[in-house]
Length: 382
Image (cartoon, rainbow, N blue to C red; front, side, top):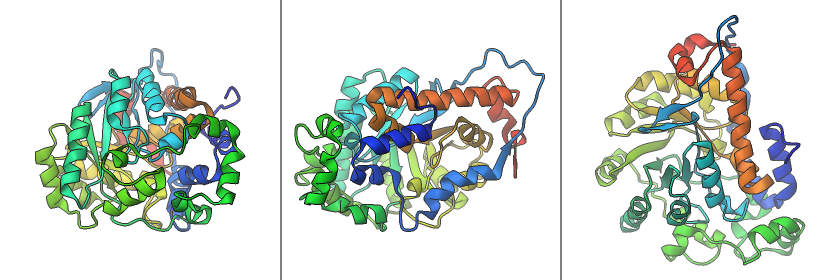
């Protein structure tokens, strides 16, 4: 990892270390992957303003969001099957997040259950992702488990009414891993260090699904859990969840100002401007292009987080100027985990933090607070 000097370097190392089937799961998007690509390319449609001869010594990257202070305007977002990128991946990622002073959100499709993550990381701010299931009693169980584990916020994910074709996964037979083919076994065995790290005790299982009796094996459990996600979910269910959940409530998957305003009315504490990393509606807007109108629509009414395509520190600076409270990353830290375990996650965070720090200085700013105060005046559309 000593030769990894940016997030793309971590991605390349992860590609060498992961079996193709799991690398493509993390890396890929839906259908033609247009939205996944736009998440990254649309940053180039913006420019930062540079100011000189300003005192930029003693810079401060700290900020507050979701009711707490954090060392960086950054969090580790929920990423399914993270434990397939590295042994006990959710635990390791949370530990790295805690050392960096940022929160970590545990996926509903996590390999290690949230209570294990919080038990081993008692001083780390942990959030929990939630999908509302057709079985509301089971949904209640998941909510209670997150509450008992000490999750500070619930990230209700609302952009997955159905799962579209993710063509890399289809070609790789990702959903058929309940009975791996000879080709799949050959691909996995071609990564012996990954085998020793991840499957030396057998194929991992999805923590929530195992506890809820959704079958055996990661793919069977994930498939059964995914089929339980309620496609009839409405804002009335958000009202129910707001009454049920005592902590911070964040709605993840917002791309339109109208929906952002509805989130305010529903009593949400935050939203995530997200297109699921380009893994859901192909052809949807990139998140960096959707962000300004959404931030303007809600004003100071709630925290606006954003994810999708963030690979550089200046990308984070741009999002803050456009109204985001913080940025949520997924693939960058998953690549870091695959590249080097906990140290790789820490490396991903440190790379982004270092680039953000130098970006602020070169913009003539001393703090994240100053950048957020400058807002749109700190950037222009190219």
